[in-house]
Length: 66
Image 1 (cartoon, rainbow, N blue to C red):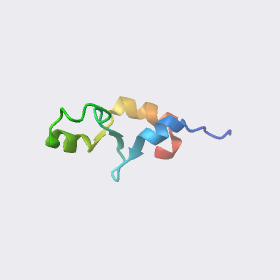
Image 2: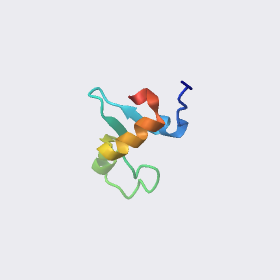
Image 3: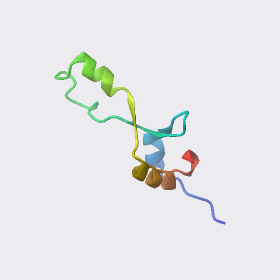
Image 4: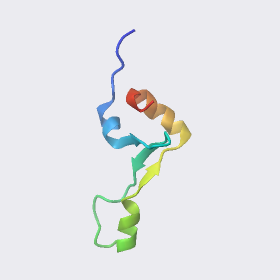
């Protein structure tokens, strides 16, 4: 059986939670931060979960998340 290659860009973007869900960073934190309220910026620092269908794709790309 050949080794499974990890998609390094996906491995940097996604992580696994303690319950086994795949977590992602929220969008909107790269620029135009002066317009956003402090509470919005705090909310954007939290991680979100990935949908079930998209999680299957990510698990194929990053075998270490299984």
